[in-house]
Length: 77
Ligand SMILES: [Zn+2]
Image (cartoon, rainbow, N blue to C red; front, side):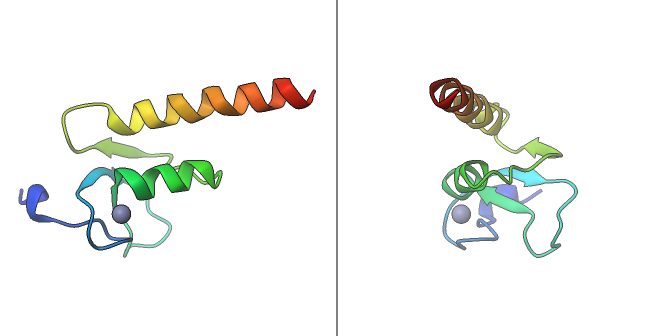
């Protein structure tokens, strides 16, 4: 597979932990944890994804930040 030798398509240095299965831009399919988190925070998370590490790292990021969002909407309501 060679996934372990691949670098993040965005920053070109991080180790990818998630792959966008339906990328808007074909040049950006593999994302490291930092860049994936930045996407979530920007409000543009990867919707169709595959975890590359055998661990739900991206799933956990999503969960983390969804909780945060819920907190924010509660706080400003
Ligand atoms: Zn990256």
